[in-house]
Image 1 (cartoon, rainbow, N blue to C red):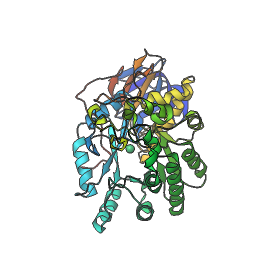
Image 2: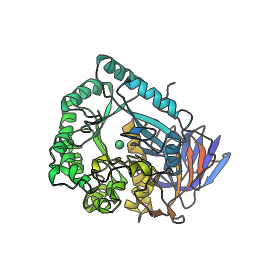
Image 3: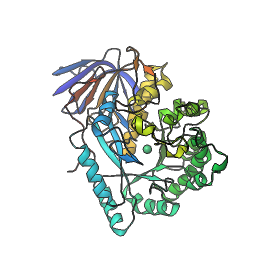
Image 4: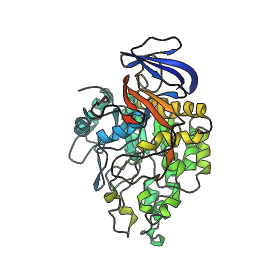
Length: 448
Ligand SMILES: [Zn+2]
Protein backbone atom coordinates (compact mmCIF):
# COMPACT_ATOMS: atom_id res chain seq x y z
CA UNK A 1 0.00 0.00 0.00
CA UNK A 2 1.34 3.40 -1.04
CA UNK A 3 0.37 6.67 0.64
CA UNK A 4 1.22 10.11 -0.73
CA UNK A 5 1.24 13.08 1.65
CA UNK A 6 0.97 16.11 -0.61
CA UNK A 7 1.63 19.85 -0.35
CA UNK A 8 2.96 19.99 3.20
CA UNK A 9 5.98 21.61 4.79
CA UNK A 10 8.21 18.60 5.50
CA UNK A 11 10.19 19.02 8.73
CA UNK A 12 12.88 16.45 9.40
CA UNK A 13 16.43 16.47 10.81
CA UNK A 14 16.04 20.13 11.71
CA UNK A 15 15.30 21.25 8.14
CA UNK A 16 12.03 22.33 6.53
CA UNK A 17 11.05 22.20 2.85
CA UNK A 18 7.90 22.21 0.75
CA UNK A 19 7.65 18.72 -0.69
CA UNK A 20 5.58 15.56 -0.91
CA UNK A 21 6.17 12.42 1.09
CA UNK A 22 5.69 8.92 -0.29
CA UNK A 23 5.17 5.99 2.05
CA UNK A 24 5.17 2.38 0.91
CA UNK A 25 4.89 -0.89 2.82
CA UNK A 26 5.23 0.73 6.24
CA UNK A 27 8.35 2.75 5.53
CA UNK A 28 9.27 6.10 3.99
CA UNK A 29 9.87 5.62 0.25
CA UNK A 30 10.75 9.15 -0.88
CA UNK A 31 10.62 12.87 -0.16
CA UNK A 32 10.36 15.12 -3.19
CA UNK A 33 8.07 16.10 -6.04
CA UNK A 34 6.03 14.19 -8.64
CA UNK A 35 6.02 11.05 -6.50
CA UNK A 36 2.48 9.85 -7.39
CA UNK A 37 0.23 8.16 -8.01
CA UNK A 38 -0.61 6.33 -4.79
CA UNK A 39 -3.62 4.35 -3.57
CA UNK A 40 -4.10 6.79 -0.69
CA UNK A 41 -3.53 10.54 -0.78
CA UNK A 42 -3.43 12.92 2.18
CA UNK A 43 -3.65 16.65 1.53
CA UNK A 44 -1.28 18.45 3.90
CA UNK A 45 -1.84 21.97 2.55
CA UNK A 46 -1.27 24.51 5.32
CA UNK A 47 0.26 21.79 7.51
CA UNK A 48 3.69 20.73 8.72
CA UNK A 49 4.60 17.09 8.16
CA UNK A 50 6.83 15.67 10.89
CA UNK A 51 8.36 12.33 11.76
CA UNK A 52 6.44 10.56 14.54
CA UNK A 53 7.39 11.93 17.93
CA UNK A 54 9.37 9.92 20.47
CA UNK A 55 8.90 10.34 24.24
CA UNK A 56 11.94 8.85 25.92
CA UNK A 57 10.62 9.03 29.49
CA UNK A 58 7.22 7.52 30.29
CA UNK A 59 5.87 5.62 33.29
CA UNK A 60 2.84 3.43 32.55
CA UNK A 61 1.49 0.09 33.78
CA UNK A 62 3.60 0.29 36.91
CA UNK A 63 3.24 0.45 40.65
CA UNK A 64 5.12 3.41 42.09
CA UNK A 65 5.30 3.61 45.85
CA UNK A 66 1.87 2.72 47.21
CA UNK A 67 -0.07 3.20 43.99
CA UNK A 68 -0.75 1.62 40.63
CA UNK A 69 -0.50 4.25 37.88
CA UNK A 70 -3.69 5.40 36.13
CA UNK A 71 -2.37 4.61 32.63
CA UNK A 72 -1.62 1.16 31.30
CA UNK A 73 -0.01 0.43 27.93
CA UNK A 74 -3.31 0.80 26.10
CA UNK A 75 -4.41 4.13 27.57
CA UNK A 76 -0.86 5.51 27.66
CA UNK A 77 -0.16 4.77 24.02
CA UNK A 78 -3.66 5.98 23.11
CA UNK A 79 -3.14 9.48 24.51
CA UNK A 80 0.37 9.41 23.05
CA UNK A 81 -0.62 8.65 19.49
CA UNK A 82 -3.56 11.08 19.58
CA UNK A 83 -0.96 13.74 20.31
CA UNK A 84 1.64 12.74 17.75
CA UNK A 85 3.84 10.45 19.86
CA UNK A 86 4.32 7.24 17.89
CA UNK A 87 7.10 5.74 20.02
CA UNK A 88 7.54 5.84 23.77
CA UNK A 89 10.10 4.41 26.14
CA UNK A 90 8.82 3.00 29.42
CA UNK A 91 10.68 1.51 32.36
CA UNK A 92 11.29 -1.93 33.79
CA UNK A 93 12.57 -2.05 37.36
CA UNK A 94 13.75 -5.30 38.88
CA UNK A 95 11.57 -6.14 41.91
CA UNK A 96 12.88 -7.67 45.13
CA UNK A 97 11.81 -11.23 44.29
CA UNK A 98 12.51 -11.46 40.59
CA UNK A 99 15.23 -11.23 38.00
CA UNK A 100 15.46 -8.27 35.64
CA UNK A 101 14.55 -10.60 32.77
CA UNK A 102 11.42 -11.74 34.58
CA UNK A 103 10.36 -8.15 35.18
CA UNK A 104 10.93 -7.40 31.50
CA UNK A 105 8.94 -10.40 30.31
CA UNK A 106 6.07 -9.32 32.54
CA UNK A 107 6.12 -5.81 31.05
CA UNK A 108 6.24 -7.14 27.49
CA UNK A 109 3.33 -9.49 28.21
CA UNK A 110 1.26 -6.60 29.56
CA UNK A 111 2.04 -4.51 26.48
CA UNK A 112 1.77 -7.15 23.75
CA UNK A 113 -1.12 -6.55 21.38
CA UNK A 114 -2.41 -3.55 23.34
CA UNK A 115 -0.31 -0.64 22.07
CA UNK A 116 -1.35 2.09 19.66
CA UNK A 117 2.23 3.38 19.48
CA UNK A 118 5.59 1.58 19.46
CA UNK A 119 7.07 0.88 22.88
CA UNK A 120 10.55 0.19 24.15
CA UNK A 121 12.02 -0.07 27.65
CA UNK A 122 14.82 1.22 29.82
CA UNK A 123 16.06 -1.29 32.39
CA UNK A 124 16.76 -0.67 36.08
CA UNK A 125 18.62 -3.50 37.83
CA UNK A 126 18.39 -3.51 41.61
CA UNK A 127 20.37 -6.68 42.46
CA UNK A 128 23.92 -7.42 41.53
CA UNK A 129 24.70 -11.10 42.13
CA UNK A 130 26.69 -13.00 39.52
CA UNK A 131 23.49 -14.31 37.91
CA UNK A 132 22.14 -10.74 37.68
CA UNK A 133 25.25 -9.55 35.85
CA UNK A 134 25.07 -12.50 33.45
CA UNK A 135 21.43 -11.72 32.73
CA UNK A 136 22.14 -8.01 32.19
CA UNK A 137 24.76 -8.91 29.61
CA UNK A 138 22.33 -11.29 27.93
CA UNK A 139 19.66 -8.58 27.77
CA UNK A 140 22.13 -6.13 26.25
CA UNK A 141 22.96 -8.70 23.57
CA UNK A 142 19.21 -9.09 22.93
CA UNK A 143 19.07 -5.36 22.10
CA UNK A 144 18.30 -3.54 25.37
CA UNK A 145 20.80 -0.70 25.33
CA UNK A 146 19.49 1.86 27.82
CA UNK A 147 19.82 1.44 31.58
CA UNK A 148 18.21 3.88 34.01
CA UNK A 149 19.94 4.48 37.32
CA UNK A 150 19.27 6.66 40.33
CA UNK A 151 21.51 8.62 42.69
CA UNK A 152 18.67 8.81 45.23
CA UNK A 153 15.53 6.93 46.36
CA UNK A 154 17.43 4.77 48.82
CA UNK A 155 14.18 3.82 50.58
CA UNK A 156 12.67 2.47 47.36
CA UNK A 157 15.73 0.31 46.72
CA UNK A 158 16.70 2.26 43.60
CA UNK A 159 19.78 4.11 44.88
CA UNK A 160 23.16 3.35 43.32
CA UNK A 161 26.27 4.72 45.00
CA UNK A 162 29.35 5.86 43.10
CA UNK A 163 31.03 2.46 43.42
CA UNK A 164 28.00 0.67 41.96
CA UNK A 165 27.67 3.21 39.14
CA UNK A 166 31.36 2.84 38.34
CA UNK A 167 30.96 -0.94 38.17
CA UNK A 168 27.93 -0.62 35.87
CA UNK A 169 29.74 1.84 33.62
CA UNK A 170 32.84 -0.33 33.50
CA UNK A 171 31.09 -3.64 32.83
CA UNK A 172 28.19 -2.58 30.59
CA UNK A 173 29.68 0.47 28.85
CA UNK A 174 31.91 -1.57 26.53
CA UNK A 175 28.84 -3.59 25.42
CA UNK A 176 27.25 -0.43 23.99
CA UNK A 177 24.95 0.54 26.86
CA UNK A 178 23.88 4.17 27.30
CA UNK A 179 23.11 5.28 30.84
CA UNK A 180 20.13 7.37 31.92
CA UNK A 181 20.67 9.03 35.27
CA UNK A 182 18.24 10.54 37.73
CA UNK A 183 20.57 13.08 39.32
CA UNK A 184 19.91 14.26 42.86
CA UNK A 185 22.72 13.94 45.39
CA UNK A 186 21.28 11.67 48.07
CA UNK A 187 23.76 12.81 50.72
CA UNK A 188 22.70 16.43 50.21
CA UNK A 189 19.02 15.48 50.40
CA UNK A 190 19.70 13.58 53.63
CA UNK A 191 21.55 16.58 55.06
CA UNK A 192 18.60 18.96 54.69
CA UNK A 193 17.59 20.23 58.14
CA UNK A 194 13.86 19.49 58.31
CA UNK A 195 13.36 21.06 61.76
CA UNK A 196 12.77 24.50 60.24
CA UNK A 197 10.55 23.23 57.39
CA UNK A 198 6.76 23.12 57.64
CA UNK A 199 6.25 19.68 56.09
CA UNK A 200 2.48 20.18 55.86
CA UNK A 201 3.01 22.71 53.06
CA UNK A 202 3.49 21.41 49.52
CA UNK A 203 6.06 24.14 48.90
CA UNK A 204 8.35 22.46 51.42
CA UNK A 205 8.97 19.74 48.81
CA UNK A 206 11.23 22.17 46.95
CA UNK A 207 13.18 22.84 50.16
CA UNK A 208 13.60 19.12 50.78
CA UNK A 209 15.03 18.62 47.29
CA UNK A 210 17.18 21.76 46.74
CA UNK A 211 18.70 22.80 43.44
CA UNK A 212 22.20 22.18 44.80
CA UNK A 213 21.46 18.45 45.03
CA UNK A 214 20.81 18.24 41.29
CA UNK A 215 23.84 20.31 40.38
CA UNK A 216 26.09 18.28 42.67
CA UNK A 217 24.93 14.90 41.31
CA UNK A 218 25.22 16.06 37.68
CA UNK A 219 28.74 17.33 38.30
CA UNK A 220 29.81 14.03 39.85
CA UNK A 221 28.15 11.91 37.15
CA UNK A 222 29.64 13.92 34.29
CA UNK A 223 33.04 13.32 35.81
CA UNK A 224 32.54 9.59 36.32
CA UNK A 225 31.03 9.00 32.87
CA UNK A 226 33.84 11.00 31.26
CA UNK A 227 36.51 8.96 33.04
CA UNK A 228 34.86 5.70 31.98
CA UNK A 229 34.11 6.93 28.46
CA UNK A 230 30.42 5.98 28.56
CA UNK A 231 27.45 7.84 27.03
CA UNK A 232 25.38 9.66 29.63
CA UNK A 233 21.83 10.97 29.42
CA UNK A 234 20.60 13.11 32.33
CA UNK A 235 16.84 12.83 32.76
CA UNK A 236 14.46 15.62 33.80
CA UNK A 237 16.97 18.45 34.31
CA UNK A 238 15.22 21.12 36.39
CA UNK A 239 17.94 23.67 37.22
CA UNK A 240 19.91 26.27 35.29
CA UNK A 241 23.08 25.13 37.04
CA UNK A 242 22.79 21.50 35.90
CA UNK A 243 21.84 22.51 32.35
CA UNK A 244 24.89 24.78 32.10
CA UNK A 245 27.25 22.09 33.37
CA UNK A 246 25.93 19.59 30.84
CA UNK A 247 26.18 22.17 28.04
CA UNK A 248 29.80 22.87 28.93
CA UNK A 249 30.65 19.14 29.15
CA UNK A 250 29.46 18.37 25.60
CA UNK A 251 32.79 19.41 24.12
CA UNK A 252 34.62 16.65 25.98
CA UNK A 253 32.15 13.77 26.32
CA UNK A 254 29.04 12.09 24.97
CA UNK A 255 26.35 13.60 27.16
CA UNK A 256 22.75 14.54 26.45
CA UNK A 257 19.93 15.74 28.63
CA UNK A 258 16.21 16.25 28.68
CA UNK A 259 13.78 18.50 30.44
CA UNK A 260 10.00 18.43 30.50
CA UNK A 261 7.16 20.91 29.99
CA UNK A 262 6.57 21.09 33.75
CA UNK A 263 10.06 22.56 34.27
CA UNK A 264 9.74 24.93 31.32
CA UNK A 265 6.33 26.38 32.01
CA UNK A 266 5.42 25.79 35.66
CA UNK A 267 7.17 27.16 38.71
CA UNK A 268 7.06 26.69 42.46
CA UNK A 269 4.07 29.02 42.83
CA UNK A 270 1.90 26.03 41.83
CA UNK A 271 2.99 24.41 45.09
CA UNK A 272 1.72 27.42 47.07
CA UNK A 273 -1.89 26.75 46.06
CA UNK A 274 -4.23 25.18 48.64
CA UNK A 275 -4.16 22.01 46.50
CA UNK A 276 -0.46 22.49 45.73
CA UNK A 277 0.37 18.86 46.52
CA UNK A 278 -1.23 17.95 43.18
CA UNK A 279 1.80 19.56 41.48
CA UNK A 280 4.28 17.48 43.40
CA UNK A 281 6.96 15.80 41.33
CA UNK A 282 10.68 15.09 41.69
CA UNK A 283 12.76 17.03 40.99
CA UNK A 284 10.34 19.68 42.25
CA UNK A 285 9.01 22.67 40.37
CA UNK A 286 11.55 25.48 40.76
CA UNK A 287 11.77 29.27 40.95
CA UNK A 288 12.26 31.73 38.09
CA UNK A 289 11.95 29.98 34.74
CA UNK A 290 12.99 32.81 32.41
CA UNK A 291 16.64 31.79 32.30
CA UNK A 292 15.69 28.12 32.06
CA UNK A 293 13.55 28.78 28.98
CA UNK A 294 16.32 30.92 27.52
CA UNK A 295 18.61 27.89 27.82
CA UNK A 296 16.01 25.79 26.02
CA UNK A 297 15.95 28.33 23.17
CA UNK A 298 19.75 28.19 23.03
CA UNK A 299 19.56 24.42 22.55
CA UNK A 300 20.76 23.37 26.01
CA UNK A 301 18.26 20.49 26.07
CA UNK A 302 18.83 17.82 23.47
CA UNK A 303 15.30 16.63 23.87
CA UNK A 304 12.05 17.13 25.70
CA UNK A 305 10.40 14.23 27.47
CA UNK A 306 7.43 14.11 29.78
CA UNK A 307 8.34 11.87 32.73
CA UNK A 308 4.64 10.98 32.40
CA UNK A 309 3.70 9.55 35.79
CA UNK A 310 -0.10 9.65 36.17
CA UNK A 311 -1.47 8.98 39.63
CA UNK A 312 -5.21 8.65 40.09
CA UNK A 313 -6.85 11.70 41.68
CA UNK A 314 -7.80 9.82 44.84
CA UNK A 315 -4.25 8.48 45.17
CA UNK A 316 -2.70 11.91 44.66
CA UNK A 317 -4.96 13.27 47.42
CA UNK A 318 -4.27 10.29 49.70
CA UNK A 319 -1.95 11.88 52.26
CA UNK A 320 -2.38 12.99 55.83
CA UNK A 321 -1.83 16.70 55.26
CA UNK A 322 1.07 16.66 57.71
CA UNK A 323 4.07 15.35 55.77
CA UNK A 324 4.42 16.22 52.10
CA UNK A 325 6.85 13.34 51.68
CA UNK A 326 3.87 10.97 51.70
CA UNK A 327 2.32 12.51 48.56
CA UNK A 328 2.47 10.40 45.38
CA UNK A 329 5.32 11.86 43.41
CA UNK A 330 4.76 12.54 39.70
CA UNK A 331 2.70 14.31 37.03
CA UNK A 332 1.04 13.19 33.80
CA UNK A 333 2.35 14.76 30.61
CA UNK A 334 2.04 12.72 27.41
CA UNK A 335 -0.88 14.63 25.90
CA UNK A 336 0.81 18.01 26.29
CA UNK A 337 4.36 17.34 25.12
CA UNK A 338 4.08 18.57 21.55
CA UNK A 339 2.06 21.70 22.44
CA UNK A 340 4.37 22.76 25.24
CA UNK A 341 7.48 22.27 23.13
CA UNK A 342 5.94 24.13 20.17
CA UNK A 343 5.12 27.08 22.46
CA UNK A 344 8.83 27.88 22.70
CA UNK A 345 8.90 28.90 19.03
CA UNK A 346 5.19 29.45 18.35
CA UNK A 347 5.71 32.74 16.47
CA UNK A 348 7.84 30.99 13.85
CA UNK A 349 6.13 27.75 12.74
CA UNK A 350 8.99 26.70 10.42
CA UNK A 351 11.45 27.06 13.30
CA UNK A 352 9.08 25.29 15.70
CA UNK A 353 8.66 22.39 13.28
CA UNK A 354 12.41 22.14 12.72
CA UNK A 355 13.15 22.16 16.45
CA UNK A 356 10.39 19.63 17.17
CA UNK A 357 11.78 17.34 14.46
CA UNK A 358 15.10 17.38 16.30
CA UNK A 359 14.14 17.48 19.95
CA UNK A 360 10.99 15.37 19.90
CA UNK A 361 12.01 12.89 17.23
CA UNK A 362 15.56 12.58 15.93
CA UNK A 363 17.43 13.15 19.20
CA UNK A 364 15.36 10.81 21.38
CA UNK A 365 15.46 8.14 18.64
CA UNK A 366 19.24 8.46 18.55
CA UNK A 367 19.54 8.15 22.32
CA UNK A 368 17.34 5.06 22.27
CA UNK A 369 19.44 3.48 19.53
CA UNK A 370 16.33 3.40 17.31
CA UNK A 371 17.75 5.81 14.73
CA UNK A 372 17.91 3.03 12.13
CA UNK A 373 14.09 2.97 12.22
CA UNK A 374 12.79 6.19 13.80
CA UNK A 375 13.42 9.89 14.15
CA UNK A 376 13.28 11.24 10.59
CA UNK A 377 11.41 11.24 7.29
CA UNK A 378 14.14 9.48 5.37
CA UNK A 379 13.81 6.58 2.91
CA UNK A 380 13.83 3.25 4.69
CA UNK A 381 12.77 4.53 8.12
CA UNK A 382 9.42 3.60 9.63
CA UNK A 383 6.49 5.50 8.14
CA UNK A 384 5.48 7.13 11.44
CA UNK A 385 4.18 10.53 10.38
CA UNK A 386 2.43 13.51 11.95
CA UNK A 387 0.48 16.03 9.86
CA UNK A 388 0.14 19.08 12.02
CA UNK A 389 -2.04 22.15 11.47
CA UNK A 390 -0.95 25.02 13.75
CA UNK A 391 -4.15 26.94 13.05
CA UNK A 392 -6.92 24.68 14.26
CA UNK A 393 -9.62 25.71 16.73
CA UNK A 394 -8.42 26.31 20.29
CA UNK A 395 -8.91 23.10 22.22
CA UNK A 396 -8.22 21.97 25.76
CA UNK A 397 -5.01 19.97 26.09
CA UNK A 398 -5.14 16.99 28.41
CA UNK A 399 -2.03 15.25 29.66
CA UNK A 400 -3.91 11.96 29.93
CA UNK A 401 -7.41 10.63 29.30
CA UNK A 402 -7.23 8.66 32.54
CA UNK A 403 -8.33 9.78 35.99
CA UNK A 404 -5.47 12.09 36.98
CA UNK A 405 -5.15 15.79 37.84
CA UNK A 406 -3.81 17.81 34.95
CA UNK A 407 -0.77 19.97 35.70
CA UNK A 408 -1.92 22.53 33.09
CA UNK A 409 -5.66 22.89 33.79
CA UNK A 410 -7.38 25.19 31.33
CA UNK A 411 -4.48 25.17 28.89
CA UNK A 412 -5.65 25.32 25.28
CA UNK A 413 -3.83 25.04 21.98
CA UNK A 414 -4.64 25.57 18.32
CA UNK A 415 -2.27 22.81 17.17
CA UNK A 416 -4.44 20.21 15.46
CA UNK A 417 -3.31 16.67 14.68
CA UNK A 418 -4.89 16.26 11.24
CA UNK A 419 -3.30 12.86 10.66
CA UNK A 420 -1.03 10.51 12.55
CA UNK A 421 0.27 7.41 10.78
CA UNK A 422 1.98 4.49 12.47
CA UNK A 423 3.91 2.08 10.23
CA UNK A 424 2.26 3.72 7.25
CA UNK A 425 -1.32 3.23 8.46
CA UNK A 426 -3.61 6.11 9.52
CA UNK A 427 -4.36 5.77 13.24
CA UNK A 428 -5.52 9.32 14.08
CA UNK A 429 -7.71 11.68 12.07
CA UNK A 430 -8.43 15.16 13.45
CA UNK A 431 -7.29 14.18 16.90
CA UNK A 432 -9.36 11.00 17.24
CA UNK A 433 -8.51 7.35 16.73
CA UNK A 434 -9.50 6.01 13.33
CA UNK A 435 -10.14 2.56 14.82
CA UNK A 436 -9.94 2.10 18.60
CA UNK A 437 -9.39 -1.63 18.15
CA UNK A 438 -6.45 -1.31 15.77
CA UNK A 439 -3.30 -1.76 17.80
CA UNK A 440 -0.48 -1.05 15.40
CA UNK A 441 2.25 -0.44 17.94
CA UNK A 442 5.26 -2.75 17.94
CA UNK A 443 7.55 -3.64 20.84
CA UNK A 444 11.29 -2.96 20.66
CA UNK A 445 13.67 -4.65 20.55
CA UNK A 446 11.74 -7.12 18.46
CA UNK A 447 12.02 -10.63 19.83
CA UNK A 448 9.40 -13.04 21.10
ZN1 LIG B 1 10.72 9.21 35.61
